[in-house]
Image 1 (cartoon, rainbow, N blue to C red):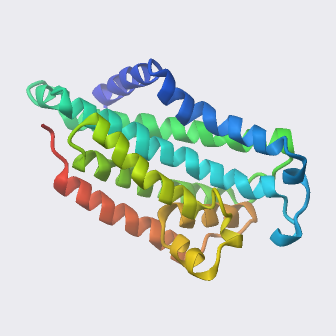
Image 2 (image 1 turned 90 degrees about the vertical axis):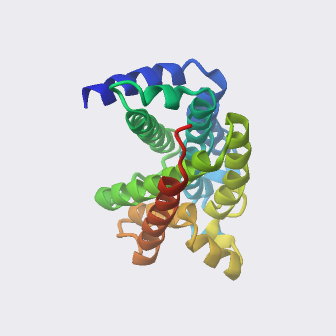
Length: 246
């Protein structure tokens, strides 16, 4: 445990030495939320969304985008780069096994993504009056399942990518469909029936709906919880099967 904590601290310091990664994982989403909230139409009730304001609809979508940036861009790139440079291979000869480094990366990414999510919720509430989750336990459960599912997919990308550059490319290819079905370009409520059904079976689509349900004071639907758990088990199992240390 002490080795894990020390490695997590070290990995966090290294993370903050990469300004581009820091910007896109931590700073970009709050900036995007502020820009959207500054548009007057986004703060007005919309009949198409049952009187809800568009800014309220977009907060969980931007949370999903932030989570996917950690899971599909930062995590696979770092792990694939460590494998490419032989860091994981060399660690196998030390008392601190490479699995501890993997755990440190996951712990760091989970903590930072949770901090970014809380910042987004705070900005939404303080700057634009967006309601906080009324059912906090339900929100936490939905968020944890969404995090597990996305990090499992990120680990699968890292396991298949031979180099750091290819991990970035593969993560980007997965990133855009994920955030599309989360509702970034077309909110889920406005998707045609087929697209909405597909969205229900994607981890971020299920996650966004779960967070919206928790914000409204309800438990997420069993379907969406099962979808996120299923992605975690399948992608995590494949990642464990194909992950290479060297």
